[in-house]
Length: 366
Image (cartoon, rainbow, N blue to C red):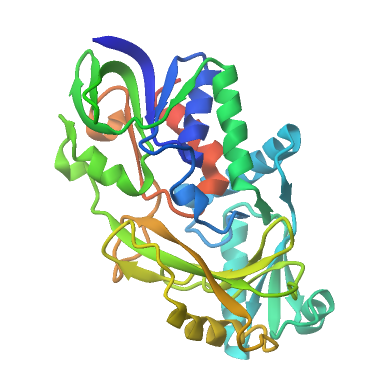
């Protein structure tokens, strides 16, 4: 059986970041990608926002890796010429009874180590964004946007320059865990032996882990799918900052984000679905979008929103459960040397990608 040092499953932004880190650490690395291109899953269906780490529970992986990842990602994009912009975002209280929530978010952000957050009065907020309706706002100057595909191409280039390789049409179907390493079988029947296996398969990570002989089922969380729909704005964007309402239980609310060309889109909302491939945007959901957006932008004209695209959040907690943290599961949890499972890597996964890669190396004692 052919042998390779390390295999990473999934060529999304997190998988590529992990593979890059392994290759730069001097390891032989293959990335198995089931489709015909990198970044066709979660990584191509998000807001492309570089988050600051404001909302997450203090001490959580999401908080720590987002705050660290924000700094790493901004620096990486600067050094490698990846298109990005520190446009900043404003979290708005649209009524007086929401002001205390802004204060709570500011305190949470401080506990997480975010130092560039500023509370704005109504007048200060309207000075920055005259089209906004709010009673007050928090300004996060560390929030930005990034060309996620260009970022993944840069990670891939670093990986390949360090001797690694992405293998397309390579769907891992089974792994057998053993004391001398891990035996892999792909969909086409190819067999391979490796010392290190990183499961970065995103939406498919729990299902794939159930195919690892020797991994107790108790270590594999249940997968839930929270669809996020986006609607694009026709015409010129009315804001220069990203505009966020106060967060909801399963997401950050229907917010306005900008791409690097200045085009505005709204979303994502939260729609629990049964399948990871349910990606059609129902135009009728636009009614809820108009209602939500007009709370902070009353000038939104009828007919200005068009269905754009949808993404699926890889949840490991259900609709009535508290939001789960990232799970970066290594040997000290499941007992298998060389295996790391990445479960529930939803937002802020893109922002955290470089920090997640560092955490994986720590789990592997590299």
